[in-house]
Length: 118
Picture 1 (cartoon, rainbow, N blue to C red):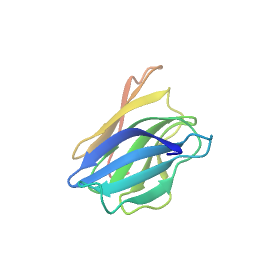
Picture 2 (picture 1 turned 90 degrees about the vertical axis):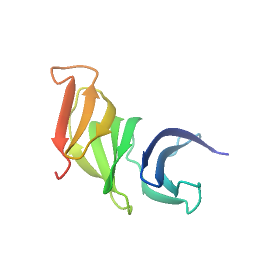
Picture 3 (picture 1 turned 180 degrees about the vertical axis):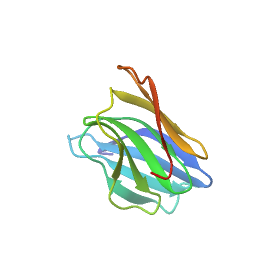
Picture 4 (picture 1 turned 45 degrees about the horizontal axis):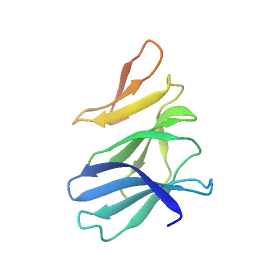
């Protein structure tokens, strides 16, 4: 295997994970059903280190150390969009029925959030 599995999130019967290339290549956000079948790639990840991830019925979210931002992509796949830019080392991330929350390891906003609909 030429990749490293990091970070996992589950929503309903879907599993999501980050697969990083060991040779310095960009990572991929992967998905499969609960049996580990019907695997697919949702998107190639922007450069940077993923620190945490979460999922809901519409999106998979992750925090990135470079750039220091929070991203999301549709559970159907596609191009990632930015949830929040210029964070202070975003780390853990969770989602509930109305908001996305993440921790920042530095700065004033130790816990930050945005509405899920943004």
